[in-house]
Image (cartoon, rainbow, N blue to C red):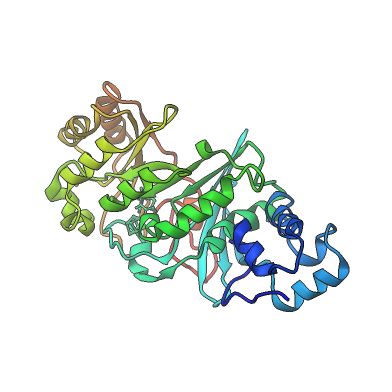
Length: 353
Ligand code: SAH
Ligand code: SF4
């Protein structure tokens, strides 16, 4: 008899979960076959699994579905970026983005429906938090997009970034489970070096992440050069002060191949001066890190502007003297797919440039 585990679909289950689901009557290799079909072969339908007997498949089909999110809408940008509006089982929708580049495809996925953090420059913040995503819904975004684009999620050219909707460290348990599934060499098998989680700075959860045996790389959204500025832009700073955030970064246990990434959204006249750049250097120069600068992606209801390219270049020049520093090229702005623009726009393509 199959055990029905309340509210669970197959994607998101690790091997012990599948063993429990199948129960003691089934031979142990059955769970492995199912795991292999779900994650290594990445079948889109249970009926496509050819290693399972017809009878057993029928039994599974009556109770379970693989449970990948459905593609509700797909928006194609002129730069090749694809934004997906994905429908979950409870009919809520989330967004994920594919950014193809020669030799590398980056899939940007969500960790929550909405976000509770309330950063003043971010469109997702305007939604508030609706709920956390399950591990299956996090992994499902990668499998769904890979499938839709004829990519194999295992391929060495797939990178995953948890930089879509939501604050991943406020859903850490499910994010870690999803990360184990994404990196398991017997399953999807994406390298740990190719998955990055980005946080607004949930200090105690950074410590917890650092203790996890299998974990993604860490990026920190710094976005300000002083405590006061950060408080205004990112209210989470009232709870987790900048000094404590930097101390957590210093204490973070990096693996030999790893660097911290700091992300810094540049807002015209707010946090983009040369003084800011010098203060950022003072904050991060003693760490093994790099800095990614992101010119604000504007949006309705966001009361800030993007700095001029010369200002951004000057800011980069100052940081680059001490720390590797890159300007992140905006992707898919014309379809609201760029950073901080992932707010569900159910209507059609909205042009903002
Ligand atoms: N919640 C996490 C991850 C999702 S946000 C975090 O904040 O880190 C991913 C990145 O987009 C963050 O670095 C965030 O600072 C940035 N971002 C948010 N709104 C933006 C905007 N309007 N323009 C450019 N980047 C933005
Ligand atoms: Fe949430 Fe990140 Fe947007 Fe801040 S920037 S509101 S943490 S998604």
